[in-house]
Image 1 (tube, rainbow, N blue to C red):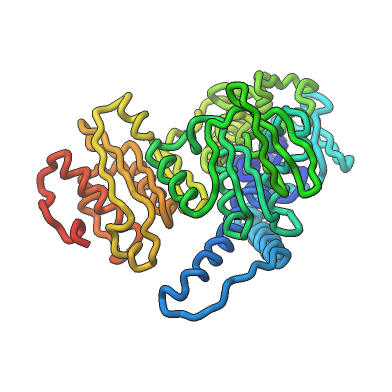
Image 2 (cartoon, rainbow, N blue to C red):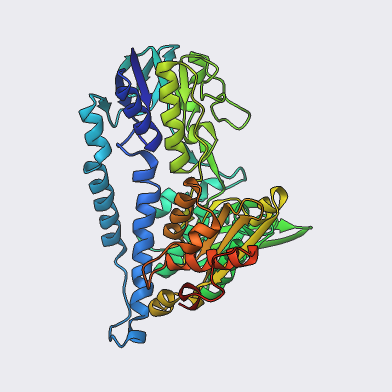
Length: 470
């Protein structure tokens, strides 16, 4: 059986590896570089820039530890060179590339846009033509554009990463993960940043306590946040950059900056595929329609990742791709695995979650909450990173952990540990009894679990333990 996988991001690479592993003659073709958006325009470059921002903040705190140093100065061109170096190293040294080679996957990089020219055939912009018995679509997504006059004057997050210099001021439209990462990074680099969020709060999909704490900390750092600001009417070019006009309840206002970045969502990279040529249907939002087995309206074509609109996160995209490729080879029989998916935003402070928010959990369970502030923990006090909290959400009846929400340093790492505990069926009692190295950031979990278990009235857990004292 011949299989063609289109797109070499995390979903596409996993689909190709799985198809080859199952014995299919597999070809992986991609518009650009191996690794897709995640490696070239997503988490890897974002995390590299966020690390630079963290280093700048750390340098400003050196005197607190008795270390003399001058005010840090950013050479943005050198930083972007470092970003390119990291992206290149990740791409070239990826164990996934080596695994693809080992399994005999034929890889076509930088092929340009790929489109259907028939139900079983695709053609790339570079002239490459491929035919296959099965096709898996993993073309990912693109930043959604605003639909207002002058929207072409705004940048996307990808444009922001490739600037030649740090802008003196910036408007960020959209207070979700992407927008806040852009805002936090460039604020650390010296930009004067204002975030505009159309809804009543930033991070609308996060736990309310997380959104409130992140907003408080961002404002305290000097980032302006305008939530519930109304509707944008237009953008206009100015001598110094761009002007945004917006209105609410008949009252019109303007905001100006050197750069405006629109981070208002994600759209499927599907239209350029010319899916109708293969009988592949899109939904009303432009995403590829799939059934429970990730099959499209053409039974021999499957899809996974951002292009389906199911999620824009790497872990579920990889899980979906494994299922899609399995079903493409063996027939539709495997639904994507349900598992706790951790996610985090590399803002300052960082935030992360796994499982249900407190509000979601209360609609389904009788819940108990255990919350520990970062300023109660030895390691965060040592590091001077005391802003934030860790909150566990548990079901009273089963003592299962159903959610965890963290704001503060190492948030994603802390949440990852909880995801492992949830996947392994560890109860709050079990987590409270788990030993943690001291002093570490993960130790906050033991304390949060202890407080939750104490609220549950669990037996066998001492009223006062070293875990609670430390």
